[in-house]
Length: 316
Image (cartoon, rainbow, N blue to C red; front, side):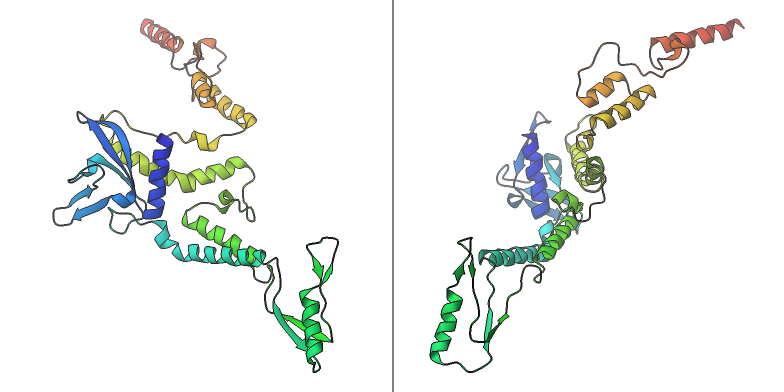
């Protein structure tokens, strides 16, 4: 599907630096797109001849020219081959992995604390055995899985492991989320980190996500598709980003109501944006005037009014 094709290409671009789709043609006209894993494609560039081509045994045994393959990439050192985010964020990813493993070990142990026992006075063998027995057993509480343990014979316990707060496990996990979000060029709020949220509503968060994150990838796809798939000069691809900035009902009504009343869009265009089917007689741009004959600014009424004014001037 279209969704899976775009998803797989973007995933490859983020992980490996490049995303590919082979263009299958019928009599020279693009007919379909075939996803190709980035690990199966080799990029070749001859600096002397200034020639770029690709090889992939999955679709062809020879050279694949740039016009026959969609190639998307974002980070590049040479202008024709991308680099994956894993190469840039490898240290941050390893740190996040270590933090998660440390948290797993800590909570998997039942939050048990390890440490050293210090005896303030010499102990004989029997006293040492009793001390060990008192620590390995315990007095059960109302919750049968918990026990109260005590330190006998004037002994002190020195913990050698940190609790979750002292180990800064929570702070480190929040920091890891923020670092990973930074490499992807997105707000940590989109990764459910609400500690430093600067948005007053969902619309602002979605608009920021669209402007600072998604728009880059949208432009990459638009440019590549317009260069290699659109064969007519009078046509071009422009992806619709309105889906990402959907507003609530009240805000939508006010927004589109102002556009219609100002003559910027027609009623049918507003209905299309809201997901409604078009109606007859609602394709003209309208501006509310006192003279009803001036309401339509691009319809027959306006043309008749202009013709009347021209005829009057000719008579004068």
